[in-house]
Image (cartoon, helix red, strand yellow):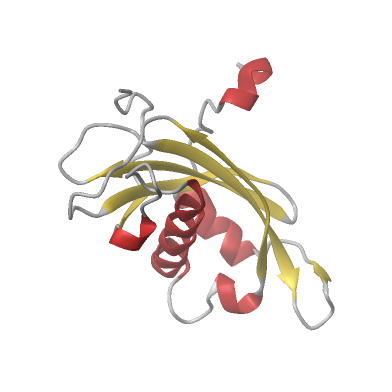
Length: 156
């Protein structure tokens, strides 16, 4: 089973996410769709940490445009929470990428690696907007290298 081999940025956030019995599939491991929920929950808590309470990026408007997941090992139920470590891996004018490594407390395995592209969005006008300077500054603090996902073979 794969161990965590990617160097994690020092300012990455790590969020504990409960693994529920209902997350299991017929094979006794976490169903693939649940990983998307783990990433979402971790992202909500990380954004609160990164952007603070006063002006939440979630309230200002952000949409998930893409998520890609490499499943590396099956996670089974064992009462320990999943640990999702995440950081910003790319920033552009109106979009940014978040990289994720999914592990579990008490294990050195990496169960999944993932990346989401998010677009800052002006909710009242129904269109993308430029990333604000205070948002860019917060993202730069947690900026790190992108993950080597399987689809990125041509980038390596």
